[in-house]
Length: 112
Image 1 (tube, one colour):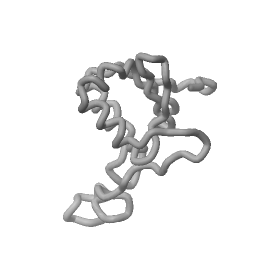
Image 2 (cartoon, rainbow, N blue to C red):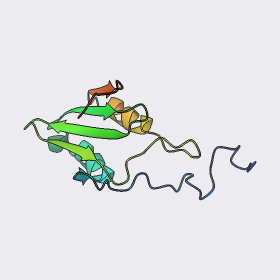
Image 3 (cartoon, rainbow, N blue to C red):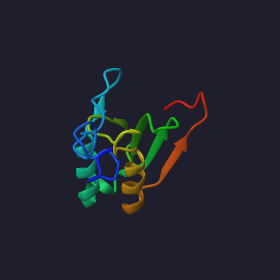
Image 4 (cartoon, one colour):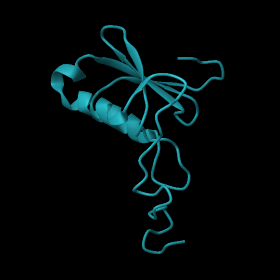
C-alpha cells in the first residue's frame, strides 16, 4: 500500500504509466491513438457509425465505419486491470463524450 496514491496502483506496476494492451497477434487492429485521432477530426468522426464491445471485461472492441469497414482497437487500448487505473470503461466514456453509439455483447457465443 502506497499512502501517496491511496492504494489505487499509482506505482509503475501498471499504474498511471501503463500503456494499455499490446497489439493483438490473432488479427489486424488499429492503435488506440489512431482511433482517438479519428474522433478529433470532424470528417473522420462522421464516418464512425458504432463501437461494439465484446466480453465481460471489454476483451475485444471493434469500430464500424460508414463504408461498412470494421476494425479492432489494438495497441494502447485500455483494458480491465484490477491493479491499476486501466479499464475499457474509458473507451465507453470517450464514446459517450463524442456521441458514438456503442453496444455491449456479453453473452457467451456473441462474436464480432
